[in-house]
Length: 502
Image 1 (cartoon, one colour):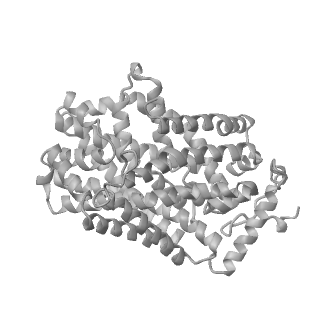
Image 2: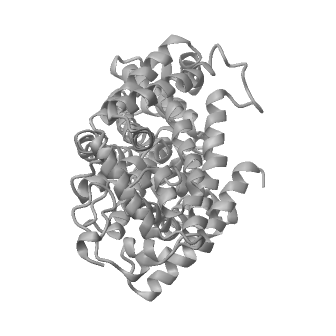
Image 3: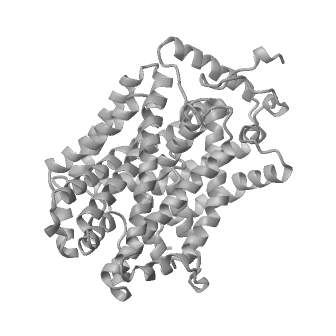
């Protein structure tokens, strides 16, 4: 086929890729993938005429920083340190790193490749891969729709704590009981948590309105370096406190007697939730990626950023707890907390007991704010991309629709701790219900489905060509990971989420 007839995958492609034999192969259902790609290109041309032309990242750096910003979020800060402390410290970290360079990396580059190959958001991407699975894109889209409203509620809590440390409201954190009462009184209110939620949600949508390059990429290039500087500063400060080295030792020195199946499963689950997989984010960001950028090297850099940030988060939290409590049973009890109780009850108390705790606490929550903001931006952009592609509306209109959905679900989530606290299912508040549905049920199923579709219902050679896998060993390894290893791992995560006692 002549070069001028080669379809461009997405409006942002700089040049047509060379034709490969694999690209002419038909998908198992008989629908040629190349025909789907040509349809995508035509759709993109129509979008450009209607003012919804897709613009991508200006280069590899912008993509990596934005994708890493999405991966670096609240899970790194309030879940990774807890799991590291509970599952043997160094042993957990060793398992996490091994899984990151195998299981996690394979899933990450698969989603990026799907996005870049099709040049579409989640619904269009799966339709382009195989028209029979367009419906699967809607299930994938449900994840960010459910998560982003309550994620912004938690982002509002972070803003509140920045304000509390900024004005010196330290008496509330004199003891764990006092810190717990302060937190519960705040989230149990009606208007104050909603106001902070609105501020955070508005900031998120404001960035997305400006688009990929002028909004997401520009903010990521500012926030991610600041995030790195703050993380390193806080980790060094925490490790220099009296008694903190015991916490460092616990984190980095593996004790192989601590290894058990639960350790591996905990590391697997944390890695999956940490890397923004099965949310449609990496598919969406991949659709904005230049064809000249190397997916494998970008994936390695994203994985490295996410893993390093998780380690630095643990270096902030665990040594701080050992320093303030003096180690021993008191430290173990403090590290039993995870999630909101760790972030908003235990850590404020720890900072209150440190030298310069007010400033350190404020810097820490600014760090959390940046991490939460980059993640919420990616969630909103995933939804906005689908609305623009399928409804042919402009970016600002799509953002307005998403903001409306965020208001409704976010306010419900916030009121679930106050006036609507009686609305529960199985003892779970409204926010917890949303979190459980997205994280424990839909996301693992989406990950399994993505691997099965890519591995068995699409010519996987096309995706491997997009990734740039050339050696026979590398291609065989990727096939085995996507077709067998990853689905089995995701099934284990799904089962453990549904039946945690097992």
